[in-house]
Length: 307
Image 1 (tube, rainbow, N blue to C red):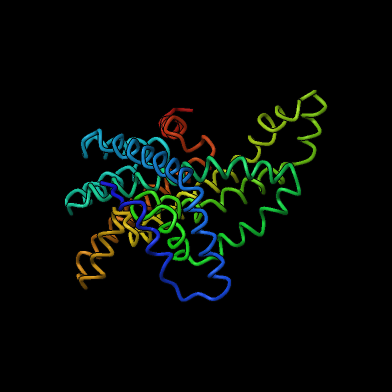
Image 2: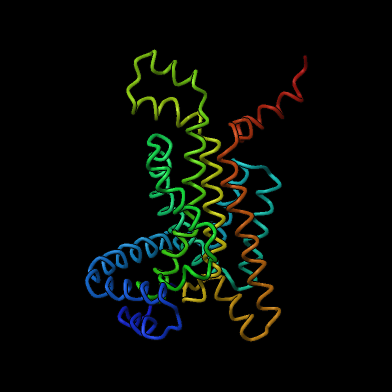
């Protein structure tokens, strides 16, 4: 289950540093934020904690074998029969290793962070594609977010939100958001001009042009951004176990701290199974309906049909 330490303990981290002038300025800014914007962080902390608790409670509602059957059914519908079998066997392996609860905690963190990243990133991508100054302003910020080492995100997250699930989600949100912004902007800008002209010729307003012409045309690229955001969120959630994020990352971290190769291997295998399931299911959103169960069933039936 997700846990967090007392909120005021973040001041302890701000008091110990070996930074230069720039680092001292950042420390001063953090202390100012904690002094004058504490109520804002309290609201964010409570909101994110409620969201991740709701997500985790929903994921724990079905029993493990029903959850595995649901995932296998989704895999059969969206991907293939082979993937459905892999998902069923993989989730049962996680259950047999005794890592079901950490896996659900990790999945709750990934889904919450990805949801928040998409909630913020998609509108920013649309604005970037339609308003050039917004893109010029966002581009260096995205460069900074993508090139900054992942561990660096943990420091301000801990200073502002203490330890636990909330700073892990905030750090994951910042780390995983750039792909969806970039690929949404790219997908909308790559829509052929003749399609836009046809839309305008039929009298579309700017909003109708966005929802009925640009977004459907940009959907494969946009879904690629969703896939990348989910995968980056999973990788960052494992790293965020260092600040109390819990889940499978905590299992891997304990394996490293205790030099327990078996424990670390089991945690790593569970992460791989979860990553493959999330990757294949989110990739299926990029494909056309030809791989849907109905289309594949129709293709199989056509093999037995007499000419």
